Image (cartoon, rainbow, N blue to C red; front, side, top):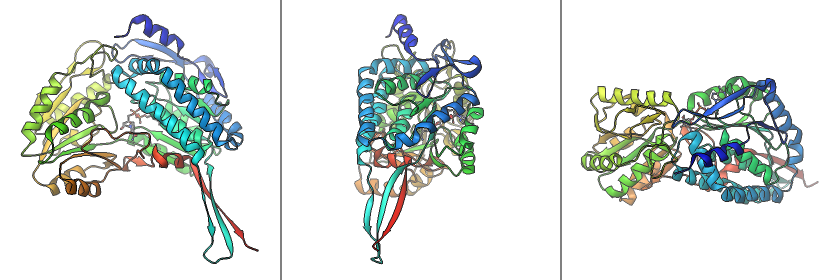
Length: 489
Ligand code: NAD
């Protein structure tokens, strides 16, 4: 449990201005926007609300230092990232509390995000000094081919509200490591964590202009001119698929490099030979982490008909025991949803499924009173055609359907335009290996309910995105390949 005075003290420390060219400044015209605590609806901060003019200034600042930053020593970039990692560890409690306040996640999960988000700083501090190329004779034997990697150039990084720290570090760290400068635009609902994080980069010695932050209530008005500016070379976006599609088409004008981490509709397949207790543990984390508001959240539980009743019984007992409340309270597992619209949408999905014949085993309704709360919910017997099987739920609802054989499980799992992650529980190794090939997702948890790791290439197939973040692949999103031919004579 945190005290009101600890919260107040922390909020007083959080920068409220735009960070452009190494200085903190008000938005032009002095406009501001407010940030609310989704558990209470109370305003917790008032910060600068950038205009298109401020965005242009941020891009100017990034462009001004790009050439110099591209020539900086990889070791220098590595050291800055490593220092930022160390500072973040020291200030872990502060960051965890801030995320819980502006986004609503339980403190224990917020601490987990500080670890996960921080790992991108450490990982890319290690990758910064390992950027390599190739060298070899051409097949004709008439010259040498040199293949090197150069920073892409100024980047625009747009992040969502659900993982305020990790989604930022997953982009900012590889951009810094690769020698790119950037303008970062956090989500309007959770901008405070990025502002506080940038003060960590400043303390770690990042030169002015390398990372610039604009916070705004008019994302599209502010973003479109940046994307249209010919000096920008790269757009990296994490968020919903419809917004991603719009941004891809804007980026097409300037033929920008794009990385898109978009929505998901993860299948969670439980075979008849699964260790059911492990599957239940995996299901609870895959579903209820971040109050169900994760792109990797299990969206459809596809359970073999012979174990479905036992599975539902076990998850229902655990879900009914979950403590709901403000994320800062002790023992809370389910915090608020991000806003009332999210509560409404979750309710609509539940009602649609129930109207078609699904059974409510636990929860099922919004919670009346202050804040944006929805009961942790289990639905069984969800019929084909229900909206909840097609749409990304982004709420604490575990929806179960059944299958009869492996081919049907594969067909149901792949029956979505998304392809981010899948979860499979089976004790049959050969079957597990078949699923790796047969399920159309960029990532899979085989007997695992969480897959995220800074060392792993995170990303999706189909409408879940383009590109990978993290892992050895992550830095390549910020590098372009250059080939040089040197004739022998
Ligand atoms: P969103 O698409 O509404 O917003 C994401 C970001 O884009 C925010 O910063 C928002 O202000 C900005 N934005 C919105 N419209 C814009 C426009 N026209 N031009 C420029 N910027 C614009 O998504 P959200 O609600 O913040 O996040 C939830 C979504 O993000 C879910 O669909 C989730 O699956 C997805 N997500 C994906 C991943 C991944 O790695 N694949 C990770 C986290 C979240």
